[in-house]
Image (cartoon, rainbow, N blue to C red; front, top):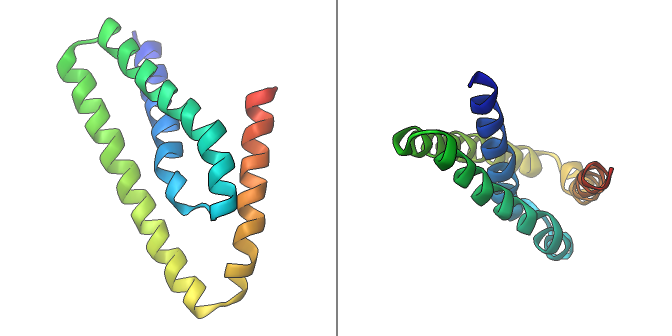
Length: 114
């Protein structure tokens, strides 16, 4: 039972994280990201909700979804504000960001493939 809860929460965090971070990628990478990673994340999020509804009560699933969505949105907003402050302060960060975007998509693609 504990393992089922851990798997359910992990899938919710994992899939919703990629749904939220879709906003931060550059336009070129956003197309690739939407086609491959975001669509898979939406399907994973929906399937994990269905798995939760099958194994757990409706109230537990709803509370888990709310906690995951609120925590990831607050975390994303926090880091987005920090990134905006540092990018205004240091111009080098804006030059490095596209490289980091490409590396993140590369590592995610490799992990999905293997």
